[in-house]
Image 1: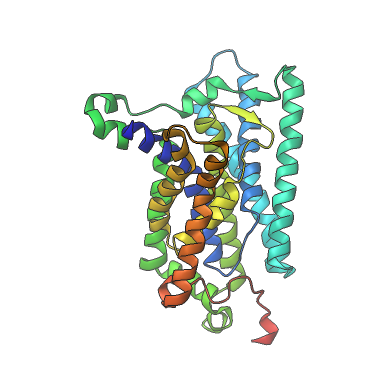
Image 2 (image 1 turned 120 degrees about the vertical axis):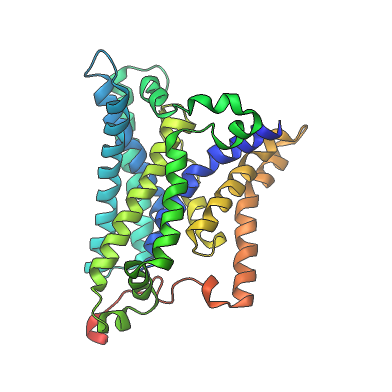
Length: 325
């Protein structure tokens, strides 16, 4: 039962890890993208479109293409969302909060539109579309994991995208702290005017970070559909995972390596009520609130301690006007 709970917690947490890592990369340049939920939604439906077109165009599924095509379409879809946000907030200096919220509404609308269209094309009696063949390719696990007992069950029983999410988070932490480009990116988020005066191209870093973060967050949507949901797309099926990913950024105090542990914790809090017997419906809803409560507690503690390394980038949410430098 304990092993099953840990496995469920990790599977639940991987989409949050993708989303939070992408959002941390974006916020490190001073941009608060509240459109992460919409980006994840578009990343998921774009992958579904790619998988649907491939499955219906061939008689025999090639496992490699069945994985590559949805990943590429997911990257394209989430990249477009990142470009939209970047153009509005970096070039036109639109309000970041309003733009992010609009992007979420837009992304959910796009996902529901195309999802509903695909459901009609399949003449499904249920309001969903199932891509079992593609999902099975994504869910391929390490062959010898079953022979390693509890160690294999806990650490080696997941699809490749789960390990990709962890690798991206660890690389992002290394990039921010150990590379010249990462330090320049952080400088842009702390004080863009000083970074600009030092010869750093502020707009380029903001565009690259925002688009890269959106692509990573979009992979979280793809993972949710192809792995967690077993290839089943349902409109409005993501729930509040995009907002949880943003909450996880605060919980991890803007450190990608800490978001690995935070995502597993959040995933566990989301499913723990399933392992407690005789819970009422009201009690289950209270347990579902705990990730947000924990985030608020962490935010209060961080604000009280005021350690600089645990605070958000100084220019977070503020547009940069070069003429005011």
